[in-house]
Length: 369
Image (cartoon, rainbow, N blue to C red):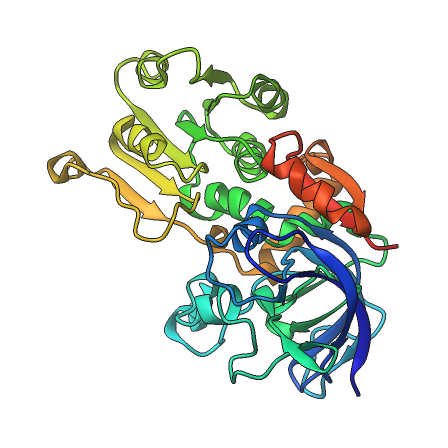
């Protein structure tokens, strides 16, 4: 049977979120109906709202949901009614990348998560006033009191888990932390530079502190973010608005270059600096997403010294494996996510969005209870 909900809908590009009544479709065999308790607000949501991402509108966004399972489909085996869960991205489960534990690189990632607006077979999950609206955003559309999620994107957590804190793990935090812990894996004595410390970059800082990296260098233009980055583990901070970041990195690296770099800005000029600061055998990971078609110039001969330039989606994580590990680190006090989060009521969603746009908030989390 269908299920009534209240959801934040974006009707047209550039318009605010409007909360109103919607209806969720009946859960299919591999789907889970979740009562949303909290949902992080991410720049990707705002990218759709601004028209930078071709998700069809009107639609319901939200892809960092957390809540309690209300109903499960007949084929669901990993969660049951009453379980607390975190929601993340989905994947097909059958392509080569899915079968080799890289679901973030699923061959159908974009249509199933980011731009489709419906299930893989084209059917809608959400309607309003008898008319279909786009949903299934990252297989959840969690800016709603209830969400219909793919089982592959659902991760069970303990009954005592603080969903209001943990909700952002499903995308942005997973991306920043996973890039460090799953891909770069800085070894003892290494150096890592993180360009841009919004929520994603700050997660990378906290993750880097858990590794053997000797120098954790943060580059940003917002003094308060640089201060927080130092509190969270950065050994060096650079305000690139006031000084030449490349020169400072050269000084810190003793003229030898930096072993690892992350660009979390999506700014190609910043990315170019990240590439140019690398030591031989160094790796730069691009996790910030500029507009489609954006390019950056790279001297091929420069790469021949073993330097690597890679792109990263979702920290190359398997959510059901990686998210519980992050939860454990948070509960141990070793990954202080609470320092990034600011809570808002669901009906304050537009205020939360403004907090991201003006840079005053790192990670807004909507509370539904």
